[in-house]
Image 1 (tube, rainbow, N blue to C red):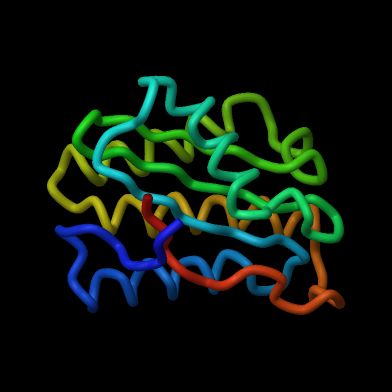
Image 2: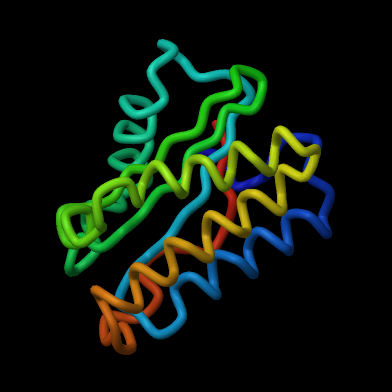
Length: 147
């Protein structure tokens, strides 16, 4: 997996997304990643997000409290995949709300803003259900990945 975001992310936009990742992780034991690719191989964004979650080694975090926010803008697909340590902690409809925040951003022409709003929602969940400082440290890079 490549850590250089595809266009249309400018360096400033990438920096906003990375800041959103860091903010989401702050005050929790969670690890958050954003993965962007133009099109979704196979067409199933949730299946693809699960495969990317595994490929990025997110399952190996100490408490499996990783969350992957996956976006394929050309296909207009968004999905969230969360590890077993956090998935069940979300209220009914929560993951759909995250997806809608991202999709709304893209629909309004502010994809980066939508990603940052989705990350903020994820951060709120992590702080509520996996609070504290991560004694294992920052287990995964705070970066946008692509493939």
